Length: 116
Image (cartoon, rainbow, N blue to C red; front, side, top):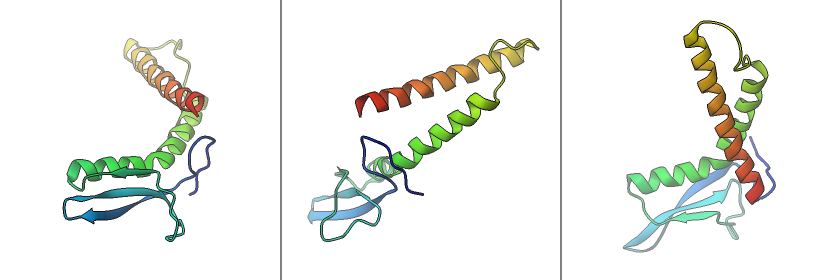
């Protein structure tokens, strides 16, 4: 599913391995279906070890993660009971914690939109 958000290249993004020399290699993150003759590189990760590969995967998944987080927040905000609901103490604490997480996620999205 393609994502389109003001301020960054539309997703999905893909990882492509590259190597310049025997000791310089890593991953290039590019928009999916980019013309191989002139790819727009979003990021280069200068490592193919497990940490570098994990970082490249995370970067490549960013547009889809952003879209998924936005959808989850819409559903959570619509269907979750208010934090001030009456009920057992454990339920109230769980709701309070869930709403804290929702507010933190909204703050991350707002920061991304403000920096775009």
